[in-house]
Image 1: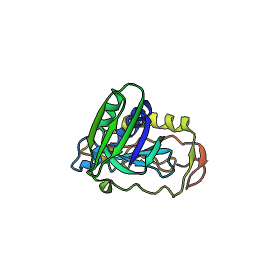
Image 2: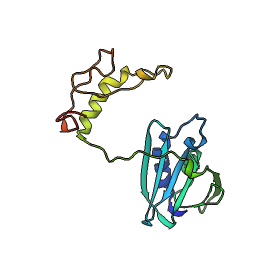
Image 3: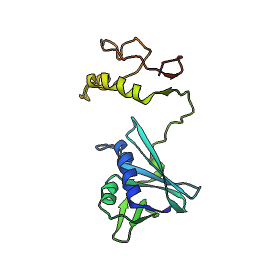
Length: 189
């Protein structure tokens, strides 16, 4: 893999995708971001996952050689410290990525891209929801989600059929959402 891109665009992309990378994990690959130079010759896809959720971001880049590599999330901090300019990334045979700009050069050790978790297919049913309505509904309920990881069933918000409890045994109800409709009809998500 060999790509050339803008340092500011890469810093922004790493800050977006790096949020999904696991901070403390027993699987080293989860602390990395997958870089995929696409065969179309004009885009680079960044992906990260913590096995619960994932973020995938595609950005424009000049692809000289397609391929895949993983890079630690600390790479994002390094890119942020660089002046605006052009960044060249090149993968090596030993799962490392060489990064070079006019101002600096570095080498980042990654892991085998084959170890990176597969992302689920998005071929299922979908729905359209007004972003403002979704934001308002989440703001009214997310405060009730717990922060204690020892009881994972109470540290998340769940959207179910309108009028039903957000979580079993909880009295807080989610307000109905309006939109084009989902798999259970108009207004469902």
